[in-house]
Image (cartoon, rainbow, N blue to C red; front, side, top):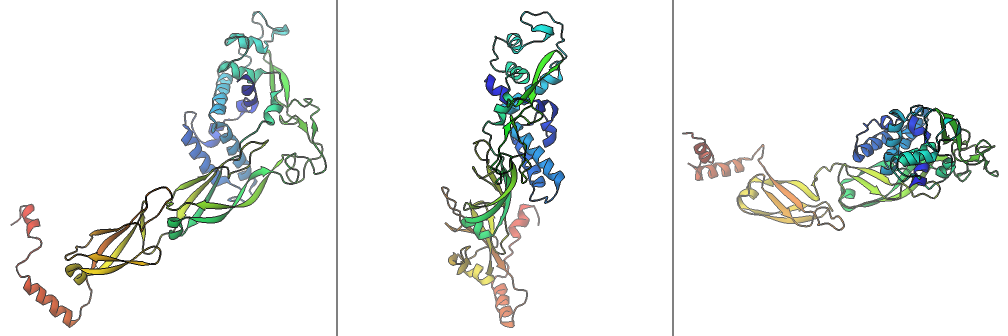
Length: 401
């Protein structure tokens, strides 16, 4: 654990407020942090802000913040480091003149002293890990810089037709993300050259400074913790080893997807570095409205116009289905307006889940204009039903006369 703590704790953690970068409080839970990151990533993504250097810098800042706060272990170490730095962990806070056995010459405490102070001669977790990372002399910067690191997640959006959302579809998706520079293969050096060991830190990736009576190890400011020095940087990535790359993948959208649903494609995000795994791709789905059909979960809905005589006398009526065919629905005599019928298996058919149905709502149409023959027939019906008042029971229930 001590070695891992040394790799994960960095000086910049004390200088950068990652919570502020994401616009969340220190007490925010993991889902809130992820939600804030995704929102900012969509707004600041290079695809949405072409040739905008400020947005690109902010996008990188947000990604860096989420790389730490989105990982439970790194977030824990980050919080502990900043807590120590801000409340007595300030490096002048212990003073330089205390009398303690094992103190180095000149009033400086060694890493072993902190191990004694927090339980045992060697760090074994908790605060001791934090001190081990903050005050180590072992040059963990280069080792940490070369550790496998997971790639960032990518957000994308697609708009599907109604039927594609029902049936599922495979579609090409063009993605832009930070990845390994193809010109230099990630080395950061001009093609044909290679990085050399950093002369400032002798390849360790860290440099030791005395501050407040302590030896403080921080990433080398010349090689930025990589332990390597690039004399002739790659003209494409300017020595970073990374560049925004564009690629096209075939994304499978499953059957039954709903408007506003977010789909996760594991391992389809930005590639990892130093052999780390790729991030994930999250696709926000928008579904176009259909002029006839609607959705209710996996069910498809339709309002079916029915003539007055069909509803009154009963009839066999045709009902369109999303696949372009029709089914026959038997209306019983006296079908009322708004009555619902269910046609089994004609809705969405998601894999591994029950199929949806077609829900038919009857809409009895009253003609705005009628012919003389129709009027005569309706008047005959009225005469035959003389004395019938469909509102009589309703009025009785509310105490009317």
